Each structure stands twice: as C-alpha cells, then as structure tokens.
Length: 184
Image (tube, rainbow, N blue to C red; front, side, top):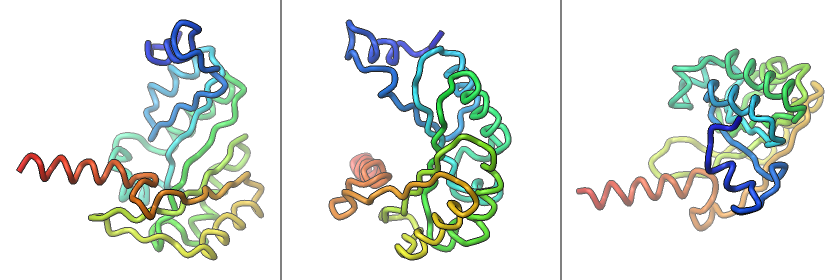
C-alpha cells in the first residue's frame, strides 16, 4: 500500500483523476521510500537523480550522497523494476569537468549495464552562486554517444527556461536567495 495520501488523492477519481501511468516519482535516492514505492502496486514511473558514476563524485555534488551508497540505490531501483515491471529513468546532470569526462561515461555504462533503464542527460543550467559550468553541446553529445555505444538507452534533455532563470535548479536557487535576503 502506498504511504502517500497525496499520491492516492492525485490518482483517485475523487481527486485529480490522474492515471498512475502518468505519474513520475523523482528521488535523489531515498532507498526506504523506493522500496515502499515498489510495494505500492501502482504503475508509477521512477526517476532517480544519479548525477555521478561513482560514490566519490556523487558525494562532491549531491548533498545527501554521504548517507546512501550507489549500490543501495541501484538495488532499490532493481527491486522497483522487478516488482512493477516499469523501466527506471536515471537523471544525470552534466557538469563541465566534474562528471562529464569520457571515463565517467564508461563508468556509468558499466554501472548500469544489464538494467532496463533509460538515462536522461541534463546539461547543467547555470545557477548564480554555484561554481558549475555547462558542458559544450559537443561534449554532451560525446557523453551520450559513449553511453549508446555501450548499449545504454539515452536522451539528452532539451534546455528550456534558462534565459529567464526558470530551468531545472534555477527557480529553487533564486527562491532560496530571495528568502535569505528577506530574512536579513
């Protein structure tokens, strides 16, 4: 049974009436919640924010990575796939010179080998106050091509909204900065 009343409401006729097949649950790797979702018995989609091919790189860029190793996240993803029959999507934000090198693509391909999964590559959207950079389109394509040549299913997400600070990651950061300024 799903533990979330919000999900039950969103997919019920008395609520929003959204088909469970149109609901994607996105997580940075909350393993216990991933196990609960696998037990839920509903055809939700699962998107896991991976962002790195190994624990060392992941700990540098994902604040919660210290608590959960990639092996635990992948095991929970595998359980979700086995119990639901649904393909898992792995989100991977490409950060120039941090996680976008050819060796990172090779390592990621090995990590996900044999899994019925899709990798959604997301070129980084610049956010003020963070020192990351967006890889060149050629470098993003080369990363995707390396994964494809290793047998992975890959999509590169189209960048939309970056010019008005409305792209992935930008809105939250600008809201945090605004809240901080208001508290001063």
